[in-house]
Image (tube, rainbow, N blue to C red; front, side):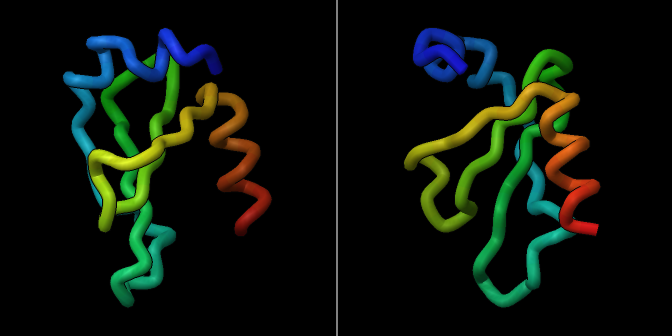
Length: 67
C-alpha cells in the first residue's frame, strides 16, 4: 500500500468500528468499513497512530484464516 494512499483525504471519510474479533478487554482493533477499495485497520487506543490497510480480498483471507 503506498504512503500516498494511506495519507489520502479518503481516509478522513473513514467510519471506524471496533472489530467483532476484538476480545473486549481493551485490546481492540478498529476497522473502517465504508471505503470500498481498502480496509484500514488501527489500534483503538491510538486512533491517530499508525494504521495498516488491506485490499478487500486480502482482508477476507486474513479474517477467514482467523476463523
